[in-house]
Image 1 (cartoon, rainbow, N blue to C red):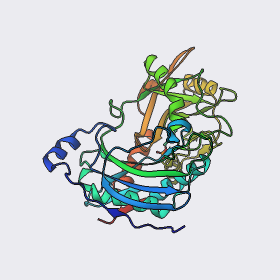
Image 2: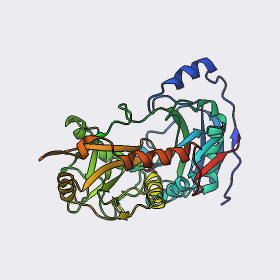
Image 3: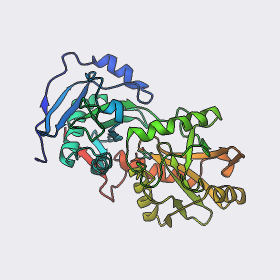
Length: 364
Ligand SMILES: *Cc1c(COP(=O)(O)O)cnc(C)c1O
């Protein structure tokens, strides 16, 4: 299997006119507006990776028996392209996304996409749709690489053919309320992932299983759901699509460890590194929901925040559950949260020294 591939360019017959695009990206929201192109690469058991194309974004034609529609072999990634102050186009740790995509594929019995092809596909799309990167503060071009089984066969086995695709959408801030602390609903009825399951894989199925809990959160007046572990319903795991951090009055920071049921966030890993490089003591380990309530009440817990590529860093101000509700530090964003977000976004946007070599410049 060759590690690189020639991406054939099939130009868009009628790209969005510049004035229309400018209006679209001025206030893009999140995930509603898409750029002109997509990259697709096919895989089959006979040919391996083949037929790589940059082409107009368009609908797929799927057979009703396509395996993904029945047995849900689907994985994805989420990353962003930023416009640096000097006009450079920047990706943040894209090889980490490529590697996680490989691990997700392995768990879902899907073919392993070489890192080089993943990166080339992403860069090719960014180059083609570079004018779709919004200029506004906090805005970026969200990139969504994904892969699904398109073989037409109803037998239960790993499919024999797949499509890898990358699409892009200009995005503003993820949470409509801006940097205001969010509220979370601690679900006691639903769990996200169990030991030996797919919690560490970025697969659509995890999200499908989380939506009812997210709906429960909304019904209870909360922005997001926070999941507890499946075995004891005692340990805090993560949100539907973000990892979670706790900041204490002694300056220490805690985040649940990667036990196999938690998605290993690249933002999570970056925050750990940043916090340690700023002298903070970061522990990756279990934290119980009971302890969370006690520490919030005693004041030992000063800040809680969630993090992920889409929303970056969001303070959590209020926690609601079947038995009641509590707040953390009066539901006001704390200084550690603010500082870590500022530090991370400055690196991502090329406004700070890149001490850890996290930035990846896209050659235009
Ligand atoms: C993608 C994702 C995250 C965050 O990962 P990042 O690499 O930081 O974007 C956290 N939890 C879940 C369930 C996710 O799917």
